[in-house]
Amino acid sequence: MASPPDTSKTIKLERYNSYLRRLNSNKLFKASSKILSRATVLVAVILILFFVLNGGDSHNFHTHTNFLSSNILFGDAAWVKQVRDSAMPRGTNGMSILVTGAAGFIGAHCSLALKKRGDGVLGLDNFNDYYDPSLKRARQELLSQHEVFIVEGDLNDAALLKKLFDLVPFTHILHLAAQAGVRYAMQNPQSYVASNIAGFVNLLEVSKEVNPQPSIVWASSSSVYGLNTENPFSELHRTDQPASLYAATKKAGEEIAHTYNHIYGLSLTGLRFFTVYGPYGRPDMAYFFFTKDILNGNTIEVYQTQEGNEVARDFTYIDDVVKGCLGALDTAEKSTGSGGIKQGPAQLRVYNLGNTSPVPVGKLVTILEGLLNVKAKKHVIKMPRNGDVPFTHANVSLANRDFGYKPTTDLATGLRKFVKWYVGYYGVHLGVKKENHVAKTKEKKSGDSA
Picture 1 (cartoon, one colour):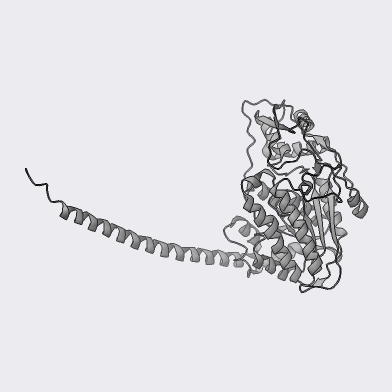
Picture 2 (cartoon, rainbow, N blue to C red):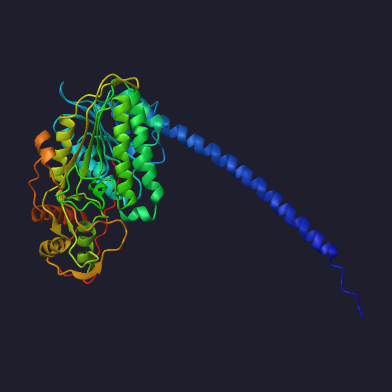
């Protein structure tokens, strides 16, 4: 029987060739990495020099260069000028306000209203992708047209916050940045802790140390009422039974606010918003995606309670909420601390901002059908156990007493204004039947910038 051929030399040769290939590949990778690293540094230096030498175009440059963080621009004179100019009030009695979440729904509307009346407004937003960032960029562009500059950065960036306070002696903070949404908390709970708790604490930590300390108005939520069954919801009702993680983080924020008020003398006002809607709203809200789905011919899910009752919400139009936010800012007393040390008792408040008129979700759909001239395809289902509550109703007598808050926009009127914006923004032609209408989101170029 013949001996098998000797393949040992062939195997050794193949192993040696494989070793050479890996060696050459590693050398090539290291060389490429070194070149790429040097090229990145060179490009960054060139871009920064370009930014400095072209002060007149600095706004657009920062807008379109999203990969350059605010940290890189700390020392840039043009960036500093934009920050200070945006935060400078027109009159001697105007406020200088840092608005966090300024590219968000409520943040953009409040920033615009404050700027129009003469206050200095500087925005802060991280432009996360919880929903389509192009809508946030559109709000950013709207604000930039009214000379409101939004710094692109995160609440948890303490160095950035300290830099902003070094540049601007803010009299007030309107803190609206947060991870929103009840259902999303089941998918990404950590984002709620990072934004709604850690981010809030970081903002308070920086605020307590500056001199003078700013007065702070911040966004809580009607969700804190959780499983409360008393109606209408009053600030005196219990809020220790949250039905969702989102609600729990907002309740935690109220307790944290109490702590910083008690220890450091920060003036803090919490606002519990009730289902805010309107133009430039959030696409994850029912009225928004109902509109899109009805136009697209898609079936919408309308919830009922486990007992078969209609789900109802205290829908509050954005203009009414803005008036409430400005009222809270105007009546906020000064903080009493200095350099992190409390000098005396400080103001601590919490208010409901709602419409006082709960409307069944079914009626919301009926109003939209009439405005869109399209019959909705409805699928009525039991409300899943995902943290949503079946009913909200705000008692706003406290806000009315303290700063004259009085909502004036009913749901039909508010939805008419929303639909008018929606069809204009997305280029929808109502009354014209289409086989497969798709409301395509506009591609908005950022104009620099919850």
